[in-house]
Length: 378
Image (spheres, rainbow, N blue to C red):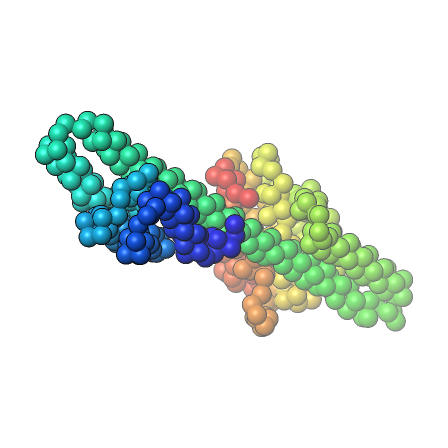
């Protein structure tokens, strides 16, 4: 069956041979060689019926008439009605609708002329009309159904492509989210560890106990970062549901304590009460505070202090982190960083924005982010 679909001309050649074998015995009984050649000529165009459907009809129809007029091939059994009917069906099935009009006229007009000139043969006229109408309608119905099925298949392929594209976009978004989380974890933890290690180096001789305590905090910070990295990377494993616990508003205090342990004085002010905005809102606020304090650790210098303001209002939140250090412009990492751009992206996901730059009226740096949680978001 698949071979016939790939080579339709073989199927059409087989159909032509089958029709000839079916109508030949009754038609060619006692006929000469010329009649046999004309009989074969009537069926031969059917081999190309799908390639040139309308032209094949006219060829079959004309040869059928000529075979009767020139050599007197007898009209017996289903000849020439059967090959002509197949040609009509082919034209209706594969041709254009407007091309059927002259075909119907070419068949009905001679039948009507015979009816008027040779006597009221109602049976013959009715038979010709019924066969013609049935054949044309059958071809149109099959053609319409095939077009409908083809449209369904194309729609299914289009939906599959759209699903694949959506899956690719979702995967890209997930990779970007994981990259942001990894940057936030690594950058913050390394900044804390470097600050603690520097403090331990400075106090190693004068106060070994403080140095040992600082190194213990370095170890604890590293272990915590390692645990968070394992949690984030676990989302990439097969079968992960992507719902591993994420830090939120409740974890901001622990974050601030880490920064304080690294030597930065941090004050926290909370105004208002956060609403029931879902875990995604808490993650966004936490990550923005984390990135801002990480920048303070990296660039504010020794003896810096910072202030974290969390202002919650109906439908939104404002995060402001300021420090009094002398910030130095950080060289952009190769390939682009995830620091301030990551904060901007998180705020934009909740219809907000981020302002980051030097403080006005004094040294230091300020990061201000506004987020709206009443208009949707992740």
